[in-house]
Image (cartoon, rainbow, N blue to C red):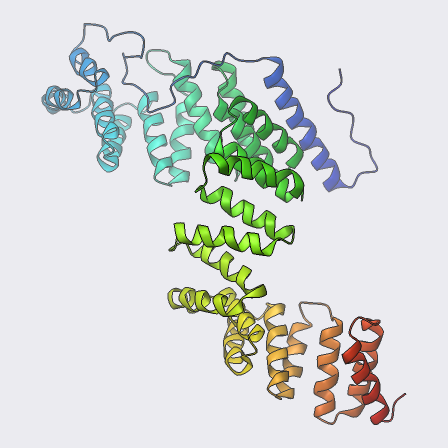
Length: 455
């Protein structure tokens, strides 16, 4: 069976690349389906010390045997008491230094753990375990470049004793790090992991994330659906599938999916946020606001949720939006986006005098915001500041196309400034663009043309 046909030559370069990416990823998914790995989960936590495993006790020989038996039993105090004197006498023993770092790591003392792992690497740069452990620790701390460096070194080495699961963990950690910045590299790393260890539910989820990062939404949808088949109650897989369905505007598919997930986890912020987006896209503004109000109560300090609620309020309850924008601006007074949104809410409340300085500050901070220039032009028109109207419309025209509304603002501003020719020209442009959609303004434009001596 042919999984992919040759890309037609009539496709543009970008389309050919997208088609090839889709084809490659379908092959990748097919690879996983053709070779179904056992479903038994393998430990993906921090690696065990050298010489120990989940299944076999440490050999009863060697100076570190009792230390590692204590570590396996999670008796970290005893392990530390045994290990510290040994390290004092053998400060360059890489295995002992790793064991010491593992003790600190297991007790979430990250800085101390990192220090011991670094000492172990200095003592033996070819020790796999310390490279992997330090890479995972740095990744948890958000130090992605440093984590990547350690993980890349780890995959060139081998665990002692041999441990395919630990080696696969290094590949999986690399795939997680690269899934957004370099999805192709992430894909290759995950394939390497799957060649030496069984597939896990997290792998399927990661396939979806990689495909989504590549912009391959159909493949991402396939992976997320497959993940949900394995784990029907996975919030992460549900959120991922919902995200790609929203991106594809499949709103009728995504709403019941999210609502089912929310019946299990009603307070999940990601799912509630997605539901609000879907409801808003479907024109169900009142339902969207109810969801966002609930989210806002759950996370009152989350600025992104507050902004979404304020934006939703702006359409129908701008006075409520105004209060939230004021609160957000108290924390970020020079945010051009917040200023523009606040100005819009003030315009909708017909508070034109208050809106003007807010919008003027917004466009000063971000001169390319065409919508803020539009709001400023309208507010200035209502305040009879017609030169400011013209200046604002002129700035707006650099970024946005003209609309019937802007033609009318041009015309009335020129008319009030007694620039007859320009006013008549823009009244005519307005009438041509309006095409019966704005009867009151069209009536006014026609009568002004007569009054100005134009028919």
